[in-house]
Length: 139
Image (cartoon, rainbow, N blue to C red; front, side):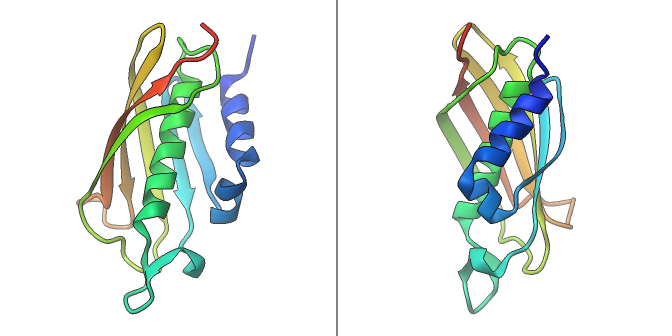
C-alpha cells in the first residue's frame, strides 16, 4: 500500500522554492494538510512595514492544498493546480510565522476541490483564505 503522507512530504521537500521559503509540512492525513512557513526577511514585500509578500502567502496556500489532495483516500497520487482563488483578508503580522491548513472536501475522477486558510498568531482573523480545484492524476 502507498504511504500518501510520505509521498506528499517527499513532494513538498523536493520543490526548490518550498525549501527556500522554509515550508514545513507539520500535519497530513486523509485529505487534510498543515504547512508552516517561518517569518523570513527575504520574503518581505514592503520593506517599510516588514509584511510578508502576498506571493509567499499564495505559495504556502497552493502547496498546502496540493498536499491535502495527495493525502486524500480517493486520490491516486500526483496533482497540479487547475484554479486557485485567494482572498487576502489582512496583512500578516511582521515577525510571525504563517500556518496554512487545507481540506480536500470533494474529489471526482478528474478533479479535487479544496479549501484552505492561512493564519499568523491571530487565530480570530485569517491572513487569507483559498478555494481551488486540482487535477487527480493516475485514476
